Length: 398
Image (cartoon, rainbow, N blue to C red):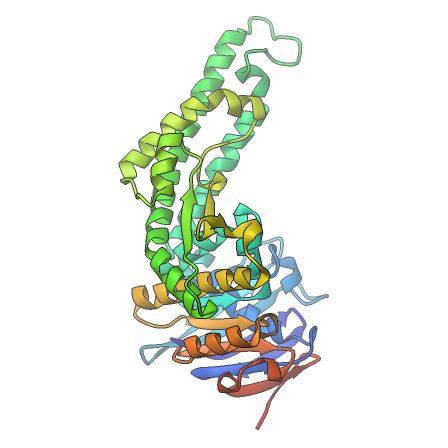
């Protein structure tokens, strides 16, 4: 699979741009702020419906414009598809496939698959658990796009359950409402009703949380050996890079999961309900859901020590890069074709040894897109076709 052509309109710094691409290696060279990362960000957006640089869509639209257009011609197995996303900040985005409008924007997922590595990915090692959860869930969606809907369902139900815990807190705590009681009102009855509603949300949340947790655990089981191999190749050493899952479920189940076990779906569902019951008092007191995939973490270790806080800067880079390369090889194996590999401004962050080893590892990828501020940072064997990017102009070098 490869992207044959990229077209953008009012995206970031570009009023418009047309960019022919081809299999193999393409390098975009330009000083910071000239627009080179914007191009690969657009391709990443076609694949994931999100940016690796910002959490909202508003910055993606050129100043003064109301929407942005990203369009990509994608070739897979000799057949071409045209994927188009209309980015509308504050309103629903729209998607088209081969010029036909899709009912849901997420239905376009899977047409383009990318694995993107950027300086921001150092947060996978040094950042908050949310960064690692997002990595795992994004990989789930790239592997099987249907998980985008499951993630949305989980977030929606979680939000509603949290709203109940917060709004009904006085009643749930058995203290009555913080106002003059209505004539005939029964505080005990109100509390019983609120607890019943909470049980309903427990059931609904467990129904969506259990499959998501099960899928994460299976994914991590498949990813772990690939991570160890990729880390060793990048770092040229035997450092025993490992990954495990830290669950918010009860201690016994959490220990089994941390040891690498993948319990059956039904067992996870029952365990979630049991854990909700056990922590109910704490949740009512704090007004927030304390159990579920949104509270979990992915633990990265080098030998016996956690990578976060103990790994050197170079080891942290190797770990983050190892995670992305492991994801690439997992998708390659599962899907039968190569995702587009994007290396966004990373060579300047790597020492010469890691640069050369990375170059050797990606040489056989079907399509690699590289951005760099200084061309000399990119190993000679990876420069391929080169574009110079300056003030939003993209010029092919002879």
